[in-house]
Length: 92
Image 1 (cartoon, helix red, strand yellow):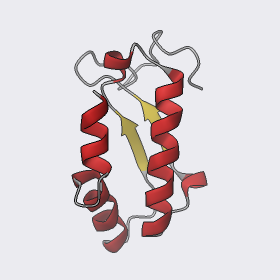
Image 2 (cartoon, rainbow, N blue to C red; image 1 turned 180 degrees about the vertical axis):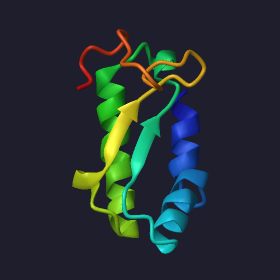
Image 3 (cartoon, helix red, strand yellow; image 1 turned 90 degrees about the vertical axis):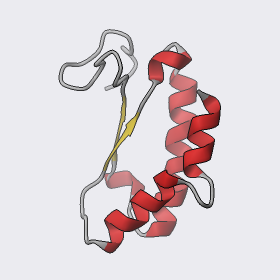
Image 4 (tube, rainbow, N blue to C red; image 1 turned 45 degrees about the vertical axis):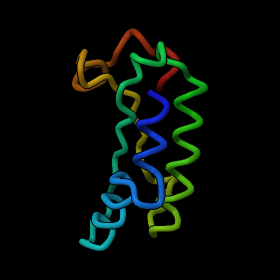
């Protein structure tokens, strides 16, 4: 839901910590899976909102957001994990 993303991206959040750790360890390529998209009814607007916020902080960490792949997924349902999901035709 909405609260989980905000908690993960907050100043002390795990998402932010993982991005910093990846950069510090020398990771050059990053894929960001935006999970639980099924709980937003695959809202393209919500996806874009999260991409924008995550892009801002990964840029501060040192990654170039233009080179990062952002993928809307539902881990629970397996959407976009291996095969493209019909639930988000807007995603290319």
